[in-house]
Amino acid sequence: MILLLLLGIGFYLYKTGELQRLTQKFQGNDNTGVDEAKRVIDMRYAAGQITAEEYSKIKNLL
Image 1: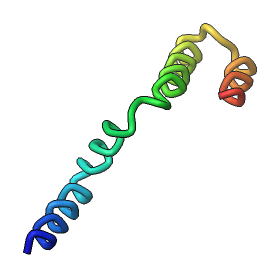
Image 2: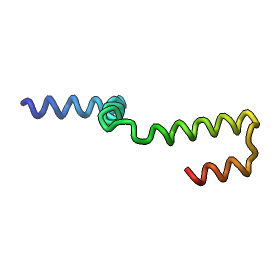
Image 3: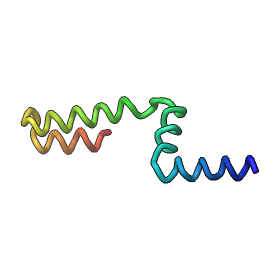
């Protein structure tokens, strides 16, 4: 009975997307630096601070 309850809760969390957020929270912030760098690069490109050529080179490095 407990196993069925846990399975039901897990399925609900999976369908609502909460399970992915919980697993990311437990895994830590390993990719946060790369994600933050990509966001900053995108913002600088959108603001016109870097050229398209520089943008593509930096994106390829990441």
